[in-house]
Amino acid sequence: MRVVEAIADVREAVAAARRRGERIGCVPTMGTVHAGHLSLVTECQRQSGFVVVSIFVNPTQFAPHEDLGTYPRSLEEDLAKCRAAGVDLVFTPNVPTIYPDGFETFITVERISQMLEGEHRPTHFRGVATVVAKLFNIVQPDVACFGQKDYQQQALIRRMVRDLDIPVEIMVCPTVREEDGLALSSRNTYLNTEERQAALSLCESLQLADQHVRDGETDLAKIRAVMRGHLESHADVEPEYATIADADTLKELNEPRPPMVALVAAKVGKTRLIDNLVIGEE
Ligand code: AMP
Image 1 (cartoon, rainbow, N blue to C red):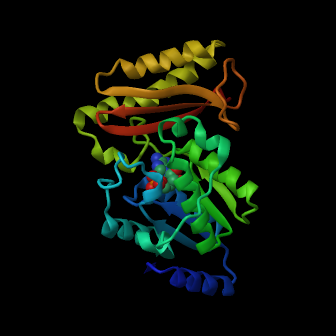
Image 2 (image 1 turned 135 degrees about the vertical axis):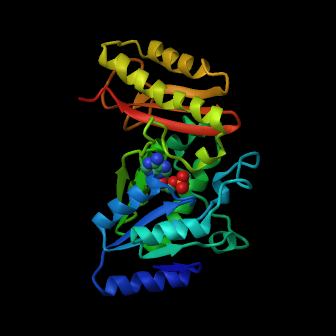
């Protein structure tokens, strides 16, 4: 496994793989690698012969009051996990490599960026779209893998790729969870024992939504209230949104119209977590 910091080194390694006839795969991450990230690597290896993992804590997707400074970083462990997983190349650029002096071009995916996460993190998706577009230009992958865990993010990337004719196939991989249902997230490392327990309320509220839809409840406002009520029943949990939306457009629904996705965001103590579940499916 090679580890490189420079764009030129990525291009050279990818060009060599292409000359060998390999398909190129890409898994963008912010590091603190966990089994969710590694599931994307496995899928990427199924889809391609040369897998590039990027590890970059992207400053432009954090607002000034957010956790950029304290975001967990564990490069040595991350590299060991990537090596054990059979990753071919890890790209670990520093900030000036991605955002050199004078940088002023950003990508905005208009509608999707403004709703849900965007209402609470108005500059977040502009940073995500921009860094992912740059990674696609640097690596020029045939395929790139993203997690369903960040549902709105994968919808935004798919929209951007279609809108900008970026020649990459986007694969979306299922959310990897702990045994008790908590979605794996690098930010789970912030949680103390009580918060870790309270954090289960996110996935539980999604399961409640699924159960109510399966039981025939058609008033989705009622189900939203149940989801929010479940989150609020935990002292440490402060919901930001709890909703049911069209799985493609992410527009909020008032009556069931599959495919649907239930989405939640909440602060657990000081830690902001998100989760989602496609609901009401056979
Ligand atoms: P991050 O490092 O949090 O930016 O995530 C990098 C990629 O891993 C994104 O495509 C995420 O959606 C994906 N990911 C994060 N957590 C999970 C998880 N629990 N299961 C599957 N994919 C995940």
